[in-house]
Image 1: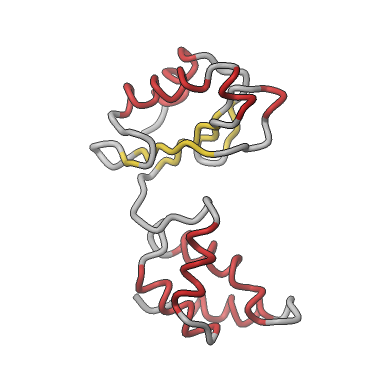
Image 2 (image 1 turned 60 degrees about the vertical axis):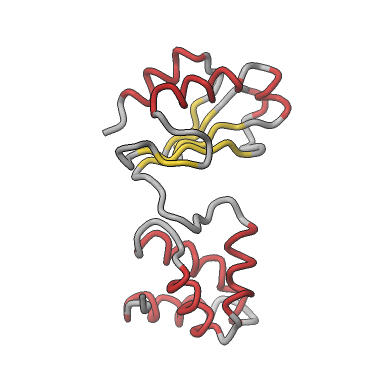
Length: 156
């Protein structure tokens, strides 16, 4: 998949804000993921590499390092349950179990209908209000397993 002319224009402008053009790589990958299907396919990684004058493996190494980038198709809704020490000590394992039960997905998988992608992640910065999860960018804190029913039940 080639980059759209609109994205190329955005990248051209974006690069002007950095001393080195490759410093714009992460924001460019975010834009690609937002506009080109919700994940970074091998074709997108190759196109971004060509645009920035990099090897595809260099772009892949950045995209695979950061958990906010997806290298396979994900559902319409992203459910991220924190499994760091604070959340684990306060019951995140129950949240994960309930989310798996409700969605039919295991962590790192999409639900059977493809609507929900479930993942467990390291600290999301809500330690004071653990356990917590992020659904489509919205934080939900101080949770118990029954809260997962209410939150995920509202996803269409």
